[in-house]
Image 1 (cartoon, rainbow, N blue to C red):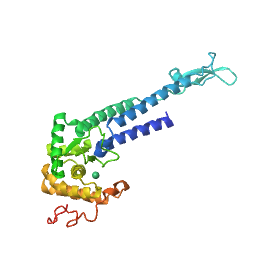
Image 2 (tube, helix red, strand yellow):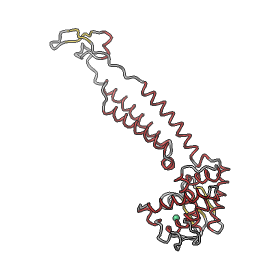
Image 3 (cartoon, helix red, strand yellow):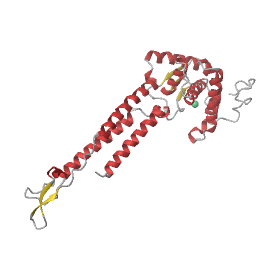
Image 4 (spheres, rainbow, N blue to C red):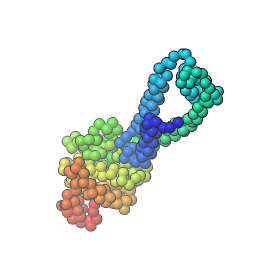
Length: 303
Ligand SMILES: [Zn+2]
């Protein structure tokens, strides 16, 4: 059976969904941005749509009922078992013609294999999601972690503040810092769940995790805590955060070298980030060793 456009679309969408799921499994960023069940839901919806359309089309094919009299139809696949089929020629005389060979029935194996692979990936993605997400941390542990993050933020802010992990994403996201938000007057900060998960990994599981994520998470906590100190300017805040981040990383359990390397990497990323959205965050020239924003002018190391 030759492949119809419909078959090709279906195959392409299956491959597309599969590629997406694999990418999702490999990218923590993608995992934090898109719930794991979404690609599966889209795939399932497409499969259902294909099946429903297929049934409808088959019905449409059957409907034009031919007269029950001796038909002039050509022998089809259904007649193959007979070998010869009786039909009528141009003049209406009955004749015998060899039946068309039964089309090699499309094997069901690929569909079943696809289903097995999809279910396997779903289970695996569910596990990854559960382990990677902040929701995988028990409520007691979450409370313990928030307490810890609060203490660290208070230390940087120099006053009583409160840090929450914003598991409902009600405050973090568009319109605030990339992964956190600080309300200076209330002394409250909300962090994105992925940030909390990374910080928890570092402070409570003794595991650095992906370097980029670790560096970013430490920076975000230091950044929001610096806001809570009363600093509103984003560039200044980020510059202080990179410096505070070194000590913060150490207090969270990282080695001195690692903590500094993370902040150096984050600084390099901040400097190379030329996106318009991040313009406010661009590190000022004074953010350097011995510059006006150097928190430790006598320390030759920066940040
Ligand atoms: Zn900020």
